[in-house]
Image 1 (tube, helix red, strand yellow):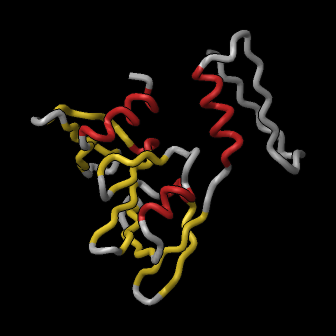
Image 2 (cartoon, one colour):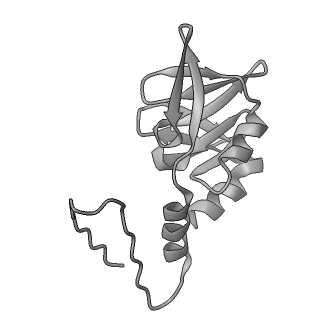
Image 3 (cartoon, helix red, strand yellow):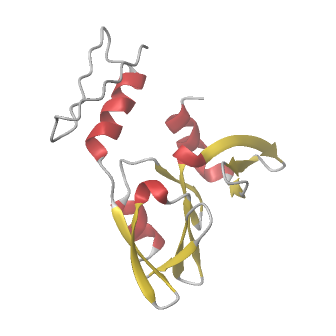
Length: 145
């Protein structure tokens, strides 16, 4: 696969032109990402409300019926239930990795096997999360392992 990037400051809108010989899974993934755009989620911190681009969020975790949005170095509270956030972020780079966590796969650096058929996800910011065996199928499908 060859990637050609060209900057044109006269454009008012970005143009993505995809030329392929075979529409394989890699090309399909690029198309899905291009069509997806970015979703903004509301996050609260210290009595302030912020709009966060989903691309800034490393993962989302639910603790005691409260959802938390984790960026590289900050944590924001969100009022939505985890299943509602998962639905909002479907067809994106977010994948459920255990009962209480949705991971942005763009920030997955590596995985390491653990006992009981679980995996440890190492994120680009140094954090570690557990991928339960129940959700491994989705991870493998996403990464085509």
